[in-house]
Image 1 (cartoon, rainbow, N blue to C red):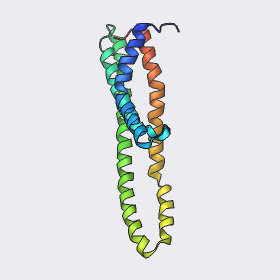
Image 2 (cartoon, rainbow, N blue to C red):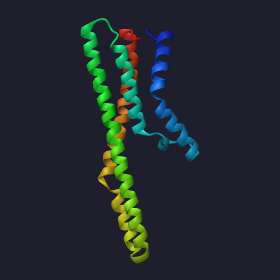
Image 3 (cartoon, rainbow, N blue to C red):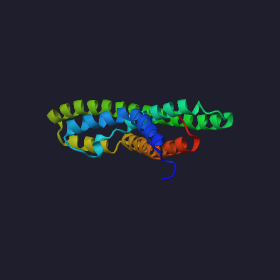
Length: 165
């Protein structure tokens, strides 16, 4: 690999691993909790937050570039990355809070229905599974994964091409 020297590797490990710590720690805790390694251990909201941290670290490195036009261009791109990552993080949290609140409300109604009309419980479960908030949360989660998949190699490429510190 051209351009991938020990300085680039150490910079990438230091900056990327540090910024991904919330994501890594959360996944590790869920591995212990669930007792298995599967897709459900990954939290896209933690990934979006980690990506915002990474963009902030890169913003600091970009601010040290001498060429003012290049610094301005890269700063704008990195700020867009920060904004998108934080927006995905906020949307994910708000949707999760909404869904958890709805779950508590439905649980209370299930409890009441189990005493009066148990047949209605199945209908309510189907309604909950077709909730549009689940679809929106799924899109936000995929957005976080796509941003991380594109951003990490791009940031490493920026480090190589522009010799970021």
